[in-house]
Image 1 (cartoon, helix red, strand yellow):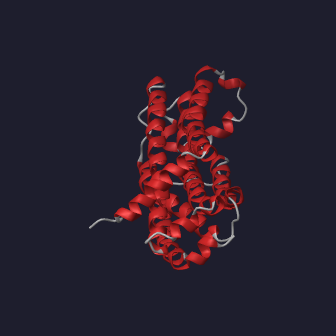
Image 2: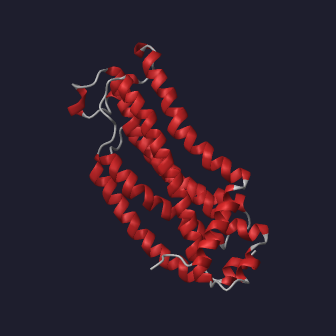
Image 3: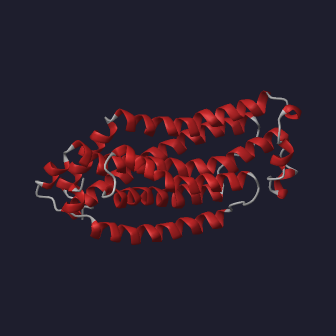
Length: 267
C-alpha cells in the first residue's frame, strides 16, 4: 500500500521544486548546515591545534565540564575537542532539523498563499486532507535529507579531527539517540508548528519571525549545558525524543482537523 497517491506525490514534487528554487530558502537550507557542521568545527579544531592553551580564556572552566571517567584518558587538546563535539555540537543537530523544517514548511504553506497559487491547488481533485498529507510529508522529507547530509559531513569533519588528535571516533549512545530519535521528532514538530501558524501568518517572513519562539529554548539549553548547569545523557535524550514524538502525533491530528480550504485561503 502506497503511503502517498500519485496526485499527492505530484504535489510533493511540486513543493520540492518551488521551495528549492526560492533563493532565500535555498540559501538558508545550505548556509546554516555548512556553518554548523563544517565551518565551526574546523575553526575550533584549528584553535585547539595551534592556539597556546595557556592563552585561551576559560579553559579551566571548560575542563570542569569533562566527565570524570574521561579526564585520565584525554590530554588538554583532546578534552577541548571532546567538549566541543559532545556538548556544543549536539545542539546543532536540533537547530538544523528545526530551522530546515520550519523554513521549508513556511515556504510551502504560507508561501503558497503569498504567491497566490493556493487557489489553483484547491481546484484540483485533491481534498484538503490530501494536500495536508502531501505537504507535511514533503517538508519533513526535505528536512530529513538535509539533516542526514549534515550529519554525514559532520561525521567526516569530526572523524578527521579524531584521527589528527588520536582520539576514538566521536559516535556514542547519546549521538545515536539524538540522530535517530530526537532529531527526526524535532523535524516533524517544526513542520506541524508552521502548519498551525499558517493561518495566522500573512507572509513568509512573518512566519519565520514567529518560528524564533521555538528556537529560543534550544539556545537556552545550549547555554545551560555549556556553562555546566545541565549535562544531557543518552537516556534523557532518548526520553526527550520519545516524548516529543508523542507530542508530534497529537499535534498532527489537531492540525489535520484544522486544515481546510478556509484556512488555506485566509489572508
